[in-house]
Image (cartoon, rainbow, N blue to C red; front, side):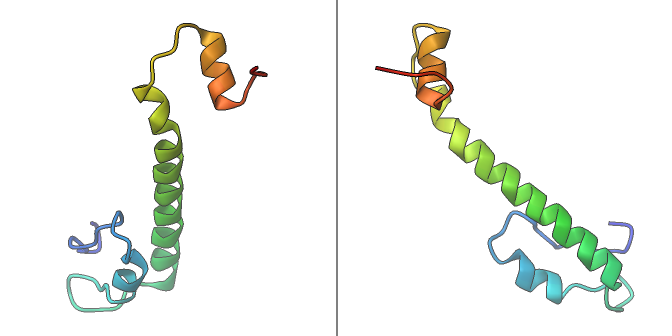
Length: 79
C-alpha cells in the first residue's frame, strides 16, 4: 500500500503472475526486495489457508469426548 499497489489480491491462484506485472503508483517497477517480501508473505498465507482447510472438517463433526477428537486427529490410538 505504501508504494501505491492496491489491485493485488494474494488469495488468487495466479498471484505469482500478477506480482510480475505490478508497479508503483508512479509507474515504476517494484524493487526486487519488495517483490521477495511479498512472495514470502503470500507463501505463508497460502500455507495457512491449506492448514485451515485440513482442520476445517473437524468442526463439522460431533464428538462425545476429547478422546474421540484425539483419535480422529491421529493423536491417540483408536480401535
